[in-house]
Image: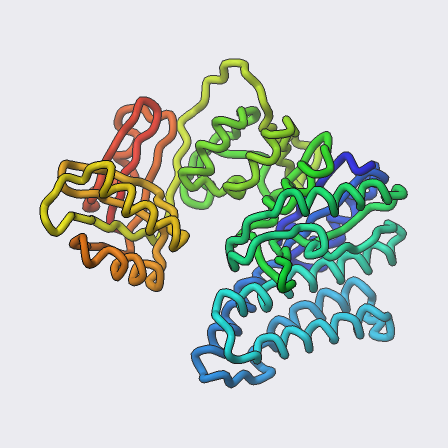
Length: 423
């Protein structure tokens, strides 16, 4: 039976030394009941996104040079890991994947989101194919799985929703057939049926993949390996003095991810909470460090304030054209349209006549929302803003961050302070 799920992100497999470090970690682990979920290497997803954008901007014309950087990047890692042995079968396998990526990027006549999922997914296929071959070469026996055969979703491209019953049937069968060999599979990618096509779970969705597998396997734990010593109360790249959070409840972790904390993908925690599966965040740089743990504890924990910044925000102010109150009917109408457009509100504030909504900047969706609302409502907006949240707020903590910048919206609850402000 598979009892443990490990997830390794792009930073943990970004080059040959990182892949060797992954091997060293696995050599110390019991691998007989282990499934690995692995992301695309380094910034590969960004590079494929750029190639797709170039193709669509150039009227369906794409030179092979558009993906030459992706090819060279993976070939360099492969050459170093396999000591320059270009006759090894992995070189031909990877070359075929590069060709498939190039051909998929050149397809015309498809909706952007559909083509996005069918091309960006190659990042995970490249990384897992290479890493699986390398580990087998080193004596760490494993079987490579295609996540698209197990994570089944709807057709909501770029943010697909799992079809849980189908996922469970397929993963249950995988578990029943397990013979003690470690499995490796891809994060982020999935597939829909009728017709069958590749989907993705949303940017940074590999955590969610790992949680789906953990839930369906009834795993004893899920471990996410990162380049930090655990969970921290703020992004160390933005705030100079951060503190490690060693233990927190599912409730608190879900609150933090809802407000935009980048520690865990927002959809990850519910599948774990439903089965009471602990989540550990461990350092792949120093495996001796104590992990941060998220679980179902009901003990009182005194949390330090957490600081969360969401970039590239749009603030939209909506007023009824007939100056009717922003009552439940009007709000229901607005939020139903947002739901249909898959626009998530990061913060809302309502007055007698105005509903203010802060959401991730997306010009296409903003235009769609404005058009849908225009008959009944007047709409104003500002782009290029930040949403700053302090969880477990204490008076005055926001001053160093705000300084003299313009605040557009400010609100506070008993434990949370939020402002939308200019850069």
